[in-house]
Image (cartoon, rainbow, N blue to C red; front, side, top):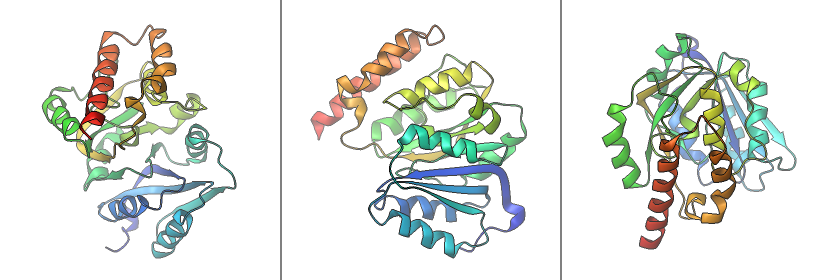
Length: 259
């Protein structure tokens, strides 16, 4: 597919952090080529990779010289939370999305997102598809009932959506940086904070493919301890967040036994 024409670019920065992601980057890069419109700015941040990830990204940038692609390189790893904030700081567009290297966009993602970029929302949340059939069934069953104006107390990350499918207003994200150092569930706590500061829109027709790995941290009880403790002290995170946590913990534990 040829590079998108200039008029097809939207007011959005896409940031892709990667570290030793050579196995996953080809799918992510290919998914960008299927989009009928593209972010006006694309940032790749290499957080200390030692595999061929950087070579893959450089080759992609050379093949798409008409796209506004920049590659940043951290000589040694600074951690995923710091990289997320690095992308937010470097964004020069009104909106910013951070797409993890092991996720990718489904066709038509930016076409569905584009109309909502003209709104006054603080953020946009897209739906997710996954390599786990149970998550897909849950999304198919519950997704149609989620209002476009996303209720603040309704949890979405981990079940209906993934962080890679969240598009943030850049100024708001810069005021509310990601939790660093990041820990399992810190993305949910971060979004809870952001949702108290403004309206978020749910776009079920835009989808990100979310790959859940066999050793998903949610399936390891001790790994979610910091998240659970902080969640218990959030007055704006009600019963639904606790039910969502319990459901995911039990579901992932069950899936691990099956494997």
